[in-house]
Length: 282
Image (tube, rainbow, N blue to C red; front, side):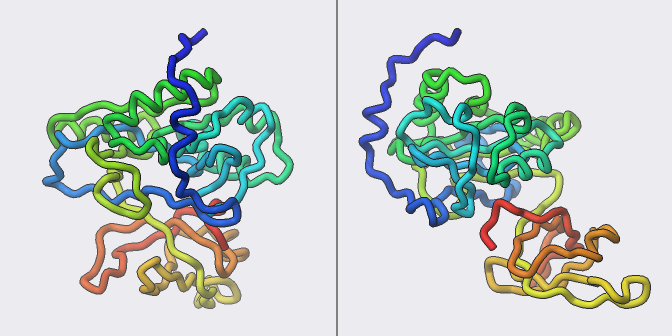
């Protein structure tokens, strides 16, 4: 049995709420991409969990896109009336399980038994991240459920040590690392307060159209026309299986693609399809 924390829910739940209503996407902190020269002494480092972003607004569990996650009642039973930001995670290499489980309108108990809520922040706490870490640990300890876990944070002194940790994490099946600035307060949007580090770059774009194939792909999808959040559009034609070309991701959906740097035009180089992001709004 975990030791109970003296931290009560009242002090945190009384803080002002900036979360949107359940039908809207929550205002989440988003990550920039790591680049050499970032002052590592300012950051905490943790594993990047490959799951579905989960936001508990104190009453409802929602995705990054604002959709309600229909979890079994036991999964969120006893959770406090405060906001928690984390990842709905099924284990290393099991993104598909996490995504399919969180999309079900009728929750499957057996599928949810493999799920964890990996909590990495308290959006309404009000303090800097250095202060939110012990508060978060106390909240998770008080919940006292094995499927709710606080993400472990550590300090890394040098880029060499950081890269070595990244390689160990990836070899063990992890996706990458996250760096969180200790002096930062929680604020929505993308900034250097949160940084992701992976062995490759990837991001999301919205499907605008299906472009017809040629040659051996004649009669089926040859590429997707996708639009980046910046408004830039490009053809995404690599990385698809034959089955995915026969039944491509629907127009309006979001897809994750992998790439290697960008052109001067800001378009990605060597972009390749990875998967559909069903936790993003259509």
